[in-house]
Length: 162
Image (cartoon, rainbow, N blue to C red):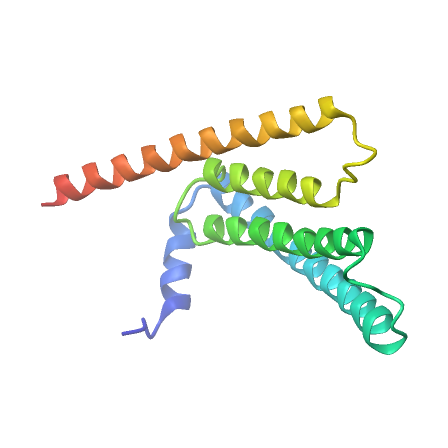
């Protein structure tokens, strides 16, 4: 059942926050609004590109690797911004602290994947590919370690509650 008076509970919670915690909440709220605007602008730009180039004048060939890379690079930009916005919303709801290691690592992994998608393999030097691959491997290991730590902490909390 949904809480019938969430604004009152939020107001009561707001009163319990310290001055710095209130400042932090306001900053995160403003950042969330700005990122939402950026997501809308990026999505609008992507829609215009696809509709005008692909559907109306048929100059965009999605089977061309360069076009495919550009389109999916733009899509991943929107996905990265959405993931960043979602991680900020978690902070606004005060479920966790300001820094979400797992969310930051996930966003970094998405950025590296986006970079792999938009790379032109014919002109990219091998050391850059090696560096990106090593970065992705390191990020994956950190994500796994943080996820594993979160799982262990949740199990320990569940045992304490039992």
